[in-house]
Length: 111
Length: 111
DNA sequence: TCAATACTGAAGTATAAACTTCAGTATCCA
DNA sequence: TGGATACTGAAGTTTATACTTCAGTATTGA
Picture 1: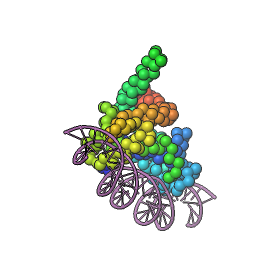
Picture 2 (picture 1 turned 30 degrees about the vertical axis):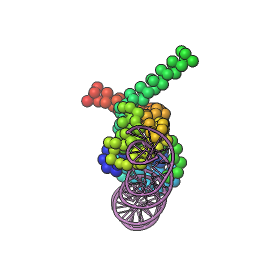
Picture 3 (picture 1 turned 135 degrees about the horizontal axis):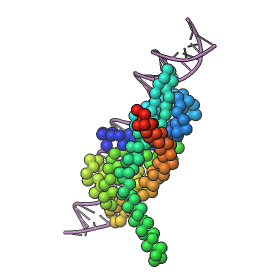
């Protein structure tokens, strides 16, 4: 299914790349310029900028250019969307976990 | 970064495809055979089986073959891993949300 | 028994993703 | 002013992904 790439797709896709998660983890510490972000990564500045664009598009990062420096920081929108997705789907596997818990409890009662 | 595809990668990657999320949503209702799952999807049985393998590898689905029928059901392991990832990262954007909340509160006090 | 059913495996294709290089364009600052 | 810095854009390459087709292999049930 190559069509209809709605937000959830791109959000999970954005989080599916280890470099992008590494960037997020870095930004968790403090806001940072693109080149500073690129320093420990073994890829070109251009590649980092491309990752940042993806992260920004799904609301995981916000960037702002001042002079020649673009400062990047964590944005909450994407994370909230992720939590929302989980909330929307949690009931199901919570029920499954409950069932599991119940099975275990029953096993406790009558082993 | 093409190497080191640890679990988190594959988990998010698995969830990044709309067809796979549709499969999960279907299985949320009830366990189902592969061909039953394939019915509403406009792709071949083979493609569905491939998606299922990916979902199974990351612990989002469990399948079991009895006779010629493979029955698929939701598995909690993957979902728990996802929740764990969120828990591990939540503090950060929670703090950001708190800051935001505080800013808004201050705006309320002195507009 | 034998045809239908329910997958399974191997191999190929087309598009997308993650890179790269190279050539700019603004800033900054000595 | 002029050279370093900090990106930005366009275009090309390589690898992965999401499919496909086609040819099996077990199972099932009339």
